[in-house]
Amino acid sequence: MASRTRTIAFTALSVGLLLWVWALIGVLFALRWHSVVRPGLPAKELFPYGEIRIGVDASYPPFEVATADSLFGIDIDIGSALGAKLNIPVRFVNMGYDGLYDSLKIDQVDMLISALTIDYSRSGDVLYTVPYYNAGLVLVTPQREPIETIEALSSHSLAFEFGSDANLLARAWLRRISPFQLMPYETPEFALDAVRLGLSNAALVDATSSRLYLREHKTFEVVQTPVSDTLFAIALSTQRGNTWRAVDQAIKEMIDDKTIEVILKRWL
Image (cartoon, rainbow, N blue to C red; front, side, top):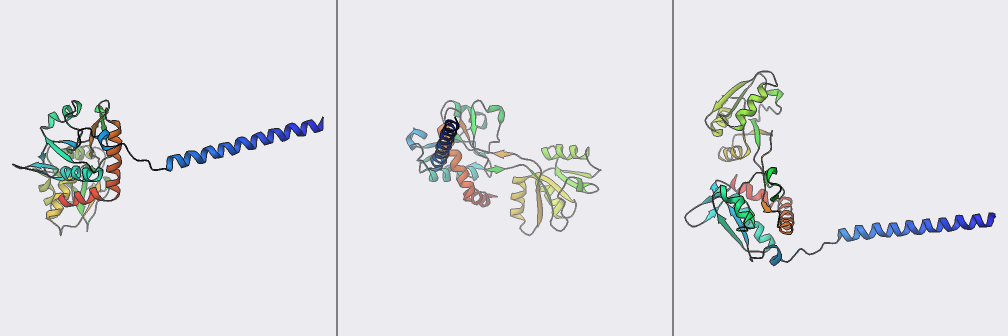
C-alpha cells in the first residue's frame, strides 16, 4: 500500500513538474513572440493611392498658412516629416475647417493634420494619434518673482485676454481662493506686456501665444506653469485602423527622437 502511495505521489510530482516546464516554455515563447519586430503592412495597403493625402485648413498661423502657390507652417512640416519617415509622397489638400471631417468620411483624404483638438464625441468615426502639441493655458510669471500655484495668486494681479478661456478660468479661480486682481486686456500679447512691464504679477494665456511672445522678447525670462490641456492630434477614419496604427507609431517615434520638438521650435 505504501509503495502504491509513493508511486502515485511520484507520478503526481512528475506531472506537476512537466506542466510547470510547459508553462515556462509557453511564457518564454510568448515573450519572444511579442519582442520580435515584424515588418508593417506594405505602403500600398496603408495608402492605396500611392501618396499620403493630408487635409488642412490653411488659415491658422503658425500651424498652417497658404500663399498663392504654397502651404507652410507647423502642421505642414509635421506632415512632410511623416511622409519622409514612412517613405511615401505627401499631398496636402487645403479646405475650409467645416469640411475637414467630412473629407475624411468620404475618403477625400487619408488623414487630417490641422491643429485639431481631440474630440471624444467623434470616437465612433475618428481615431486620433498621440498628441503632438499641447496648446493649453499657461500661467506666466517673471523668473525673479515666480508664482507657480493658483493659491499663490492671492493678493496679486492676473492679466488675461478679455472674453477668452483664460478669462473664464480666472473668474473660476476667484471663487476658489483669496481675492486677486483681475486685469483684462484686448489680446494675450497685451496681457504678457503687462507682466513684462511690471504692471501685472502674472498672465494667463494659451501656450502658443506665450511661445510666440517669448520668441520676440528673448530677454524676458519667465516661469511658465501649465494649468490646462488643449491637445492637438492627427485624425484618421476608424475604417483605416491599420493606417492609424502605422501613423500613431510614427508620431510616437518622431516625438521620442525630437523631430516634433525641432519643428515646434522652428515656428514657436
